[in-house]
Amino acid sequence: MDIDPRPVVVFDVGGVLVKLGGMAKFVKWAGQNPEQIKTRWLSFDAVKKFESGRLSFGVFASAVIQEFGLSIGADELHAEMTSWMGELCDGAQDIVAASWSHCRVACLCNANEVQWSKVRDDLGLGQWFSHQFVSHEIGLVKPDPEIHLHVERELEASQRQISFFDDSVPNVEGAKRAGWNAYYVRGTGELRARLSELKYLRPPWPAAPDPGAVEQEFRRRLGVA
Image (cartoon, rainbow, N blue to C red; front, side, top):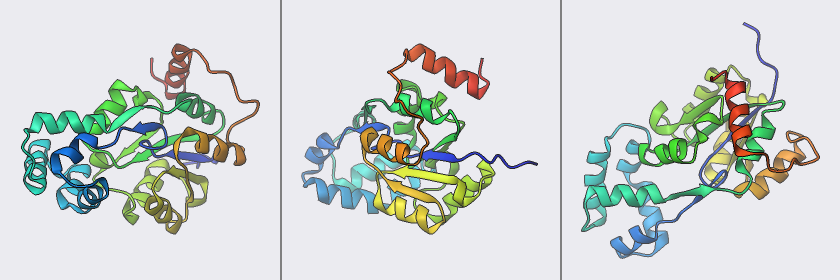
């Protein structure tokens, strides 16, 4: 089988293409400062299991409510977690569409089923990429080394073909250790600048296209009727 020689652009989603909504209500419920909550959340074993698809939401919600001493139900937690993924960053769709001109385009993100359903369905990112590597679907999370090998195998791409863009320093460092070209970016302003430096966006920068036309182009490239 011939190897596709084109560069591969791999985007994180939250904090790069999609604005993060914050955890204000959860912080209030838990009665701790945001940094304490973030540290506890990221180190909590149930979070990693949920994001890698090894826990149902019901089991996960019970564990979180108990761990953080919350006086809420699972439905309230679900609604709060959905809000942590905000709206699209300015120009996100244009950037991804422009990258298609001479690159293969994929996403790689740590996201649970609650967050990803909003990103995929409500925000419409489900049609943006040739490959979607989402932690709860593939059973792997960034920055574990196995996730980079999985992406390389699925894309049939070499390490040096891949350029990866993430807003997490540990994830960028992990990708670099795997031999990828990895870049720390926050939002579409920094993303656009870095992609332009790499010559992955062809100047002049296009005017914002009609959203329907962009969707039609994504579908054409993916072979979706």
